[in-house]
Length: 99
Image 1 (cartoon, rainbow, N blue to C red):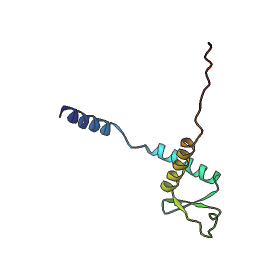
Image 2: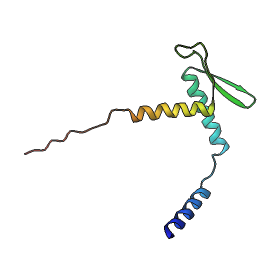
Image 3: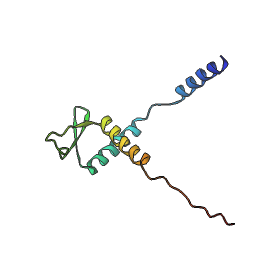
Image 4: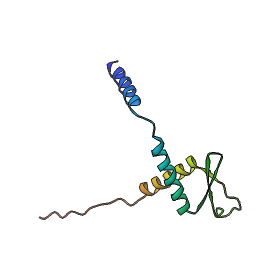
């Protein structure tokens, strides 16, 4: 019972200690997303305070290109990065044991 109560208090304290990102941080993140999207071949369209990322070429086997919201684009980029990291060859080292 004590353990549960301690965990609840710890989670509450940590939750209250975190702060949402500032406007400056959000603006830097937005600018970085736009720059990365343009380098990746996306056309960035801003309309009514909403940013859409549209690929300049349709996916292979399709004539329809689907635009993504900024959140969807970030998720897609993070998924691709995680895939590269998780599927990277494992590093190893060879050690010599002298007899």
